[in-house]
Amino acid sequence: MLEFKDFTISYEKPVLKALNLQFQPGQITVVSGASGSGKSSLLRTINGVIPYFQPAELSGSLTYQGQDLLALDMAERSRFISTVFQNPKTQFYATNSTDEMAFALENRNLPRQEIIERIDSYTRLLGVERLLDRDIFTLSGGEKQLLAITSVACMNNDIYMFDEPSSSLDREAIERLKEVLLTLKKLGKTLIVAEHRLYYLQDIMDQFILLEDATAASYQPQELDEDFLRQHKLRSLTKIQKSDLQTLDYRAKSMTDKGFEASASLLAQDYSYSYERQPVFDMNLSLEPGINFLIGQNGVGKSTFLRCLSGLNKRFKGRTFYRGRLLKPSYPWLSMIMQDVNYQLFTESVWSEISIVSEDEAAKEAALAQVGLLDKKERHPQTLSGGEKQRLLLAMAKVSDKPIVILDEPTSGLCKGQMERMIEDLQQMAEQGRLLIIVTHDYELIKACGGHIVEFVR
Image 1: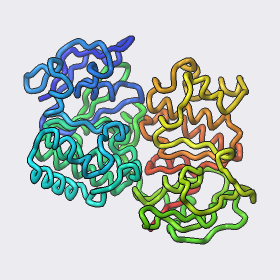
Image 2: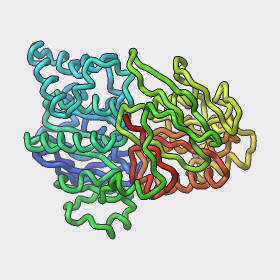
Image 3: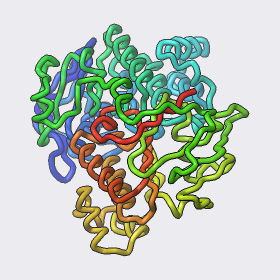
């Protein structure tokens, strides 16, 4: 059993205090709460990232099977604790996917044949054989998440921790993730899942821990009803089906469909892109101002399409027109919020960052205030949380005069309250006549926000 007793985690002030929690073998514990409530801090304390990599003041008792975990460093804990981080790229060591799965096993000096057998077993278990022997840099965000999950599963440890594991996964991949969690549970593993998205965990969790106001409270799954969710601003337990979206403004778009509306405001014409001689798409796509969601399975080409539209993929063929004008280059016309926002922050402060796109002091202050960052305007952008970095870029898009705004998986790491505030921002920009393109697997976002839906299909 993993156990906290009277445990407190503090930076400048307590993030979590007086924790008394137990995590049992053969059980799935779901940890949730608002962004910034301490979910990641809890996991990092268990695996040793806190305090060995991220300094913090710790007090109280943390034990596993009676052994004091605080006396063990990260390497010693890694012999029985595995973690999938919120951003899987931060834990990759190889450039080839199969090498990545083998990396930890090779460091344990396992025989070559055993390594091969483990990788074969777990890739079949997760249904991710297609990820074998791939260049990691060419994988989609969802595929990278699946690779990270497979790599830690191969380690066959006692404790598995997942930080927002579904954030970049499509529905099919989430079902595979659920099956893996159940398999590990049957093997007697201790499973801890920090999540905002709860619907897929409803019928498999054994314990629910709510982090709120620097404290933790444990609940049984049957105690979670709609009143509880509303009271604590948690996301829905109800699974939203694709059929629910098809009652909205929905259309399927084949990756080889050349059809388009010539009068559309945005026209992606003769878009063609291949990877290693395999065509990803060869199509036309037309979109109108307002909120446009792009959905589809992991790896179908959604993020690749955005990279082509924004000019980041240099080898693609095609032309982009906005209101009849050829966009070449396209970046003066569009703002983009990437799936990994760390690639887009360059300056020494939040205020300097937003000043790149606007000189209007009042507009910048208003935008930062709307996303809750005005009091952090002197902070270095890289010291912000993932959700705060995303909100900074959203504020930059709002004060920019660029008519096209692109967002790739914008709800990754966002709690319900932050998602609702983001929806307000998106709808406000749409009312201003902006054309928004949003790649997402988050059907709860789509249903709550509304807009046009284009499903990319092969």
